[in-house]
Amino acid sequence: MYNYESLQVYNISKNNSLKKYLLQESIDLNNIFKNYENIKILNYNKNNNCGNILLDEKETKYFVKFSPLVDPIKYITNNYIEQKVESNNENLNIEKYLNNDEYMMSLHNNEQYEENMKKIKNKINYPMNCAFIDCFFTYLSNLLKKELNFNHSLNVYDSFTCIKNDFKIDIGDSLGLVDNNKEMYKNVKQNFVSFNNTDFQEMYLDTNNIQLDSDDEDEFINNSKNNKPLIKINKENIDISLNEIVFDEIEEIDISNKNDINELNELSISNNNSLKLINNDDSSNDDNSDESFTDNEDDYDNNENENDNDELKLVEKKNMNIEIEMDDDNKSIESNIEDNLCSSDGSYSDESDESEDDPEVFITIKKIPTETIIMEKCENTLDYLLEEELINMEELKSALFQIIINLLCYQKAFKMTHNDLHTNNIMFIETDKQYLWYKYNKKMYKVPTFGKIYKIIDFGRSIFSFKGKSFASDSFNKNEDADTQYNCEPFFDDSKKRIENNFSFDLCRLGCSLYDFFIEEEDDVEEMKKIPVINMIISWVYDDNNKNILYKADGSIRYPGFKIYKMISRNVHNHSPEIEMNNKLFDDYIIKDNKKVKQLSNKYSNKIFNINKLDEFYEKWNL
Image 1 (cartoon, one colour):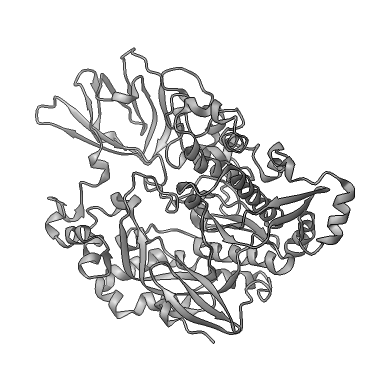
Image 2 (spheres, helix red, strand yellow; image 1 turned 60 degrees about the vertical axis):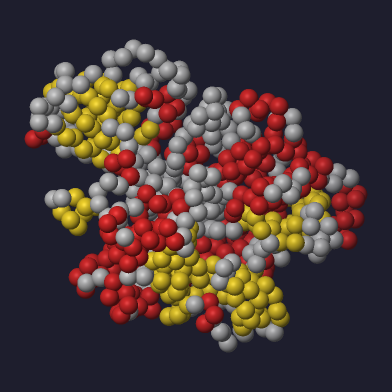
């Protein structure tokens, strides 16, 4: 019995492409996706997606997560890229809706709508859709709870695909992608998208704000690339054959002062589809060569030695947008270069770990296909505790140990990496348990809870194994947000160097998220290292060459945007949860008296979580 009307969902289906894929691989779903027989929503607060639910006559609190099956920004700007994926599955309910819904059809003419549906069909039908992967691993977490009573698992009550009405999302960090987009204006005007902010709503309703190219009124200009400073090049020593130029690739750029690129003395463009800019100014600056940017993964290991050579090199940088305009007198050339350093579409969005510079700009999308998960409600995030200064060092130590245990167990049970672990993806529930007990490698740990049990959430970028199969979010697929972070199954490209998912990635990523809570200036690092918990956090942001992966010595960012994800994947291998279990910080959690260990093992046998048993669990569910 289900009553989900209050969630504002319809076209509900219990099947999805991932479940169909699992069945095709002869994987039994009964134990994994088993839900409660009777579920009744008692109330629902649409502002925080929480409420009370009746589970087989037992009342509890719940949280409902709506994971879009399509990228919301691409969805509302009609900006999907055609992708080829191996999928014979069809999400019939969703596809039927998208093809036949009268309201949706009214937003576009039939030809436009049919073309757009072709572009997103593979996305919603792909088994590795990030929403399906998020849901699947949440259930695998729940499997650990059911089989081994793992405290850090998430309790899952139900899940389904559906159409969600009035889907709310913050696009503050993506405003540049919707600005002056004609589809966005159209969707706002026709009430398919609405801004919660009145000023934004009125701006998008005012068609005078749309700036169109005089040559083609259907194409928008003046987007983010045109707002960047122009590179002005003097007329001397210009050798250009414009008819032969194809701006597909920039092979190398040497600039001796990258901070103030205003005038360059020489521009040389050859007919081999490459461009080389050389600055003859011998002035120096204090930047280091580890600013090198490259999309050739094989170059990473060789390009990151920190040498004070005062150069910025761009090697084989692809997908660069160059516009050259020559004035009537042929006296100057203005070149506007947009370098896609972060991702395939020139941006990277970390929705849950927003920059302080990003404003909160909420929109509501009238209808969007989602994978919906009903799960336990957690109290709040680790980020909240840190921001509000509601956690002391001993409590933080306990929290971090619990997270290390959580990661270690997921790795041992499913070879999982989360790949986006930050302080907003760690939540807690309140508990009456004074201690949590663990056994690992012949050691017993007695860990104070301080009234909180911590849990990891949001697995939309995870990579893991189950029943001998590799699963990974399609965020790692070509042209998606995390493309090129790894190179492994199921998106392995045999023409490039293999890069497996990295068990040290998550703690380093978490360290990057925690670092700025405690380190205001790089000069503070040595002093803050005297605090043991913070010393551990600081150690997590150092790579295999003992370089701070976040900041240079002068406090400037070492790797901008998405590049830091790529560099952690390649250059950080000493911060796995297994290694951190030996951190001396946690020695006082270890019960060293063997006689006492034996006594406690008997007394608390039903409360001690034996991590070594996960070897048996792995064999059961992966072999």
